[in-house]
Length: 122
Image (cartoon, rainbow, N blue to C red; front, side, top):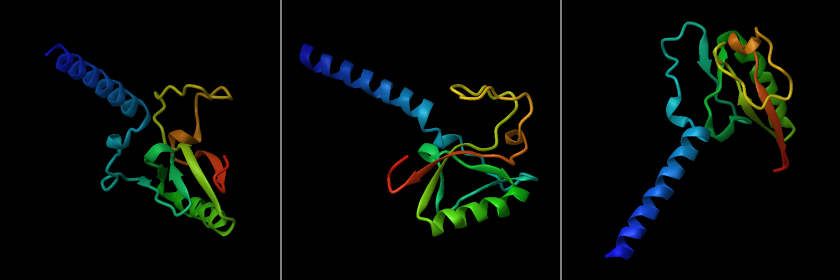
């Protein structure tokens, strides 16, 4: 009986660790429904994807420019992984290489931060 209890406790701890990891890194359940937004839309491109399934929110007027980037990436066999797109001004950016400004195009949905992934090489 003690062995079963140990297995149950260890399984529970592993589950809680996995849940915490997924909450911090795979926030797929926090996607916004953009149907009723006036200016923000969700961008779904062929070669532009959100990091770990993150939603890419942009201003609707930025879509045509992002589509040009997506077309260029497609022609050149490049995938772009978006780290950040629209974000609230109260969102604290951690791990930034450059100190964030007080105002940003991210706050209006006119900017994305991305990494280039070409042939599996980042």
